[in-house]
View (cartoon, rainbow, N blue to C red):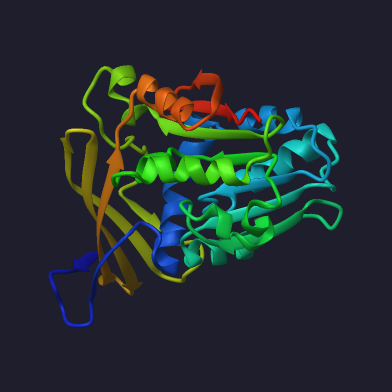
Length: 293
């Protein structure tokens, strides 16, 4: 099998992010599926919090929901333990419409389950989520998983995010759980920061698009001060006979903010939150916050 590459006419060259096409959203799911299931195992952490919520008609806000992995995982836990979640409202919020489109396509919730809404929106504008009505409707449980908090690397973005959480969370009874990847906490890992190494094949065959193959190439990884910048290329290739042609070359630069445990807890406290717990997992650390009234 030969691969035709090298700036050929018809190859789409794009500077983009990890999710900004139907191809990339599927690639993200396929690349990380086993990693989340076998290494991160974060759904049980969120399920323990879920069961502690005592609010009537509670609202769950899953920020950066992606393709709905956490929401479907919580539904599986509820079904396994025969917990009634029919009074819940689930909001899956994401900035990427491609990820939300895939969430709608790939997920299924029973009629007797919660109301589920997929909404495009920013983690920095939670008070603009229609169902929360400018903060008049409060969320009983807010999740920000997969270390996505570190994507808020620009000045004042972490403060803006937590200020938005304060606007939409239910005081006292509400809980917000924010994860930070241990790879992005140099004080914990004892080594240089880097994106987690995902075990898996170099090439991944699409399950959705016929004859499509993905290839992920990491080009560079650099830490400067409190940020980590990784550059990679994701190739989208189409197999025709014995030849594979590159049809998309996606250049992706990911910038992440590094944190220490003390920095995060001090920031949360300064903005009025109480840090109820700090759970250290194999791949992530989970901070559970409460907003005292």
